[in-house]
Image (tube, rainbow, N blue to C red; front, side, top):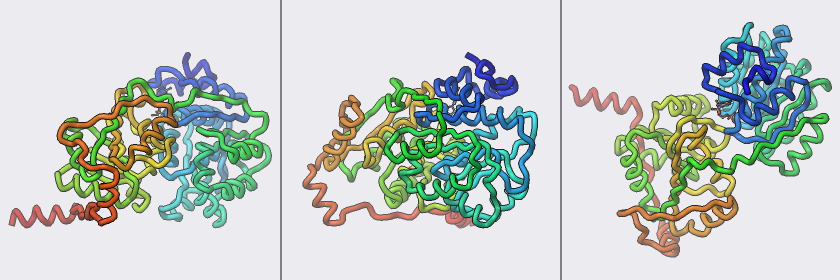
Length: 415
Ligand code: AMP
């Protein structure tokens, strides 16, 4: 089936051919005609299903009929839970509108960066706004944005938005919207709070349920490895050496561990960076862009990077620390083996984590075989590890050299 057959203009087909989209995914095939028809939509779909194009493409088609919005006004509002998703969806809008017959203005609104640029961007209004709820309300308070001309509202990752405590902000935003509008809601899961939001927001929606994505692809190999806590970085180095040049996304439990692991790899000359909530937003965006562009080999991240992010062609994911929630295990390892590519997800299981890993596997109904790697066999038991941790035998925080330090050293060597 072609995209044109779903009701999209021919110029989209050209753009999508160039992007290598041979045919619509399931969620696209179902959502695009319904949205074009003007129906409200409820879709159970996760990252990886092609859901972004499922709402962006028909919205762009509909926007063809609209004049440019007035100052401070927004025509299509896309609300998402994280700054990273804002950046990703804005990029998708730009990618899909490459052959758009008129100039399309898209504005990204998210916290952690200067508000002034975003205020200025809204002076001329915008066709599409991609926003996190908190910063959007800040801008509304400053009279930089008005929502009374919104025709289309998209809530993406609604469950995550509520998980992150955005219920009040959402309520505040919804109250500012005009009554007449088209609403699209995407969510991976449907806890009670999401059901309440659906009742509040959607009118006679078309409902789409895509097979659960946590049916992991066959091309994804899971390799849980039994290893002592203290040996994990050495094992990671071993895996990096075994897979020369391949990119790794390494998940850790805390910002501190992220910096710690990165410091240690850096000392062995690995091209490594970190992604976590302590870093300024601009730096996070730049790091992610560099990783996606293949300029960083190893990215050590907290769960911030686990959901929603689309990093194509990522061959290896490592659970250096196991995630607390079984659902996050699937989200994390789902970062690899996307779109039919092969991928491997390593998980380091130290003696303290045996029970927790069993729970993760059971809850997700997975089948895996635990491995030991020669030279990295466990030597401790759960009680020993606990005593060591009590004694404070934890890794010492190192310091990576900054670019400036390295330049200084190079200059010193030459002089
Ligand atoms: P999403 O679920 O929106 O995060 O999309 C996941 C990935 O699938 C993104 O890299 C998209 O570029 C890609 N994608 C979306 N639709 C298609 C399609 N019809 N054919 C091939 N790739 C697609």
